[in-house]
View (cartoon, rainbow, N blue to C red):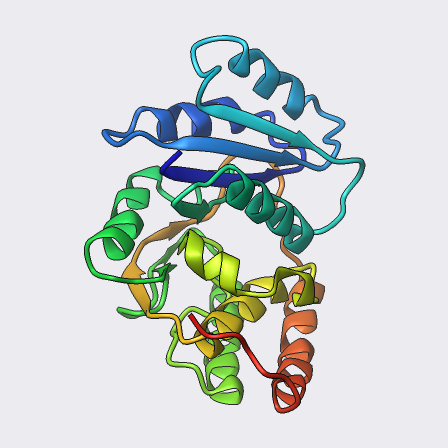
Length: 244
């Protein structure tokens, strides 16, 4: 298994079949792993139907009981990917805020440009966000600026959730020491990757706000991230990170 796309879901029945099809229809061969946190709307049932049909060898599902957090969903996905020897592991949302075509650009950055971590960045070439309220755009943009300054990382979009890891980076990162479960998880993973000596490339993307389904974002999520950054910086002074 070369390329695995991990998609965490909670109540994504409006989007799940279409996003899986969009990834499967790309010109390169991608596998998809859905991590579903007990969606009461039947998201997992849709995935199982697709697994039994045309995608039976490329689509996989891990079901968990109840909402356990974005970070733990991805950690479960990373462990699955490492166990199944995926070479390139992607994070992606189910709601089409990330364009499936951009998976090809993230893969290219890792496969052809030597990146250990490729980030689909909303802010590396300005602000590339569509259909967000201005308040949310400003909050996200300046949160990333704040994180970049406090942590001292040369990353413009520190909260990005559209990325590609090489397996050897995920094997190097001590996944059991990743602490955050919400969107601060994205910051912690990027910071840890940089401390491990990873080559990081930001790939410009356009982020489009979801059309179908309900957003899981909230002001509290950003507050967690902003406060968590200080804790993350302080703890890094007392920790030795493994190197690639």
